[in-house]
Image (cartoon, rainbow, N blue to C red; front, side, top):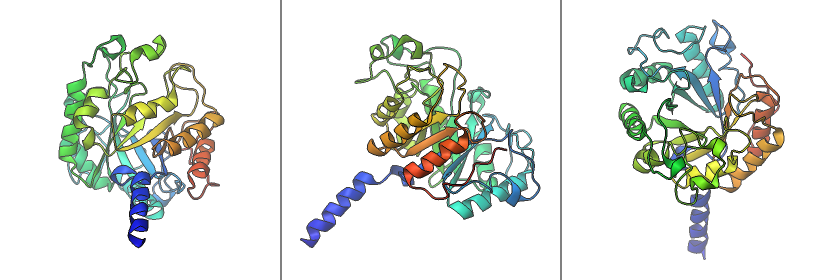
Length: 325
């Protein structure tokens, strides 16, 4: 009987454990380096003042071709736009990690920095070490060329580019350093039970299916994907983005929300949706919620979203406000 009980407990643990060291109660927030207020004291920097329910901070954004040498300890040439100096930010990160046990990643790329073919992998690894952070988040948003998944094809012009980025960042940052990616909203639509004819034309843009082939080939090298489940109009089936990525990827998945107004498509997030996404993720093998962004002001506010996630996932410090700068 004892053996049967132990076996049953093991099965339950396997079914509920999150992959790759992430919990099933993650709240990730993208942190706009250019918005952060100046501080000379690390304890007064907004990163150090982050509530404990923010379990992952993604610092936005470094250039793909960032110029950085080990021991440099300045942000010049990196694209990272803090007003505080390097040592202050590194000190604030240390305090946040000591206080909360959270993770900090450096997000590379984004919509502004698009020259991914000049990616400097060694410099990324060096600044990760000097900042004392956990790894790199790949935010690959190519412009030009269109995936063929939306029209019955099975490839994207950038398939090999994204594979190359994932392979080389992982080579530069071997485990236990973390490597994550910001997944395009419709990036896992177009295959098998998610065929293109299932979706309305206005969400079938150039990056429809962007992550399908790369995840099939090198998805195992990623520790988590933060799904950008926004900027795709009211016709985006947000919960289905989780299902589609889960069909391709076994690692940690977080549903993303954006403080309104969204950059494209006109969708306006409401708190009912936030609670629905939290519950859906809990019931469908998701690992939590991602927010763009911690400092963006709108209604609902970042704090309203964060506190709802905190309560919904059973995190701590739910009465605390997110820093606005």
